[in-house]
Length: 340
Image 1 (cartoon, rainbow, N blue to C red):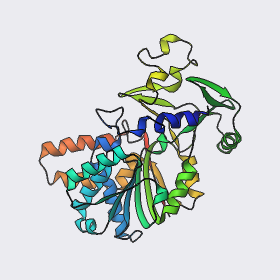
Image 2: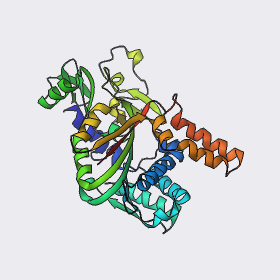
Image 3: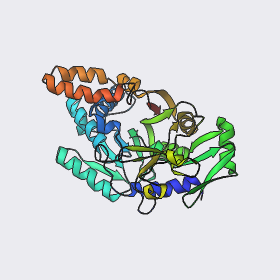
Image 4: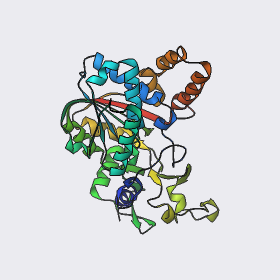
C-alpha cells in the first residue's frame, strides 16, 4: 500500500483518529496555539477587522474556519470581534467546514454555551458545498494532517501491513522530487486540490493558516507520531532501526495505528506554489511570532493590561508568550496569508 493511502486510512478511514471527536490540549495528544491562548484567535480577529476596514472584504463577508476541532478558535475570534467591533456581529456570517457529526455537535454546543442565540453558526461538509461572494478563511495546523508520501534515495515508501518497504516511485512522485530537488523526506498530498476548492468556493477571500514547517524542503525525515504528549519518530517504530535500545518500549506502530496523530513538517514552497497555480496571491509568509505581532497581539495585550488586575494580566501574558516565544511556537510555526 502506498504510504499516503496508509496515512489517510490512519487519520480519516473507518474508526480512524480524526473520524471522531478528539480533545486538544492537556487531556489530548498534543497542544495547539488555540489551546495555548485566546489571544491567538484575538489577533486573527484584529486582522479580520483591519481587512474589512481596508476595504478588501466587506462587512457582510463569511468568516470561515477549516479544521476547527472543538471550535475554540472561531469562538475566540467572535469574542474579540464583540470586544473590538461589536457591530460586525450583526453582519458577518460564521461558518465551520466540518464533515464529522461528533465534531459538529461539540462545536454547536460550545457556541451555544458561549453565546446563547446571539451568534449563529453554520456548517458545511466540505468547501465543495460552499459558494460565497467573499470570505475571511482561517485554518490552524491542517496541512500537516494531509496525507503524505515519503521518499528516500530515489525510492518511495510503501507499507506491507505495518512493515515499511521502499520501492520504485510513481511518476507523480518522480516529477515532484525533480521539481523541488527532494532526495529524502515527505511530500504532502492534496495541496493543489485544496487550493482549487478554496478558489472555487469564494469569489474573493483572505486565507490565513499556521503550521509547522520551513520555506523550503527538508533534507531529512520529519514524519512523527503524537500520543498522549509523547513524540515518536515514525521510523523508530520500524525495522529501519536495528538497535532495539533505540526503539520505544511501551508502544508499537500497530498499537498506535488510528489511536494517535501522525504528522510531518509542511514544505511551504510546495504549498505556496499550489495556491499560486490556482489563482491566489501570496501576501506574506512569516514566523508565527512575526505574523501575530503583525496582527496586533502586542497591542491587544497592552489594552488588556489597562483593563484587568495584575494577576489576570500576568496569567494571560504567560499564555500568550507560548505563541510568540522563539523557544516555543514563535519560530517553529509559520503563518502564511493568501488573497484572491
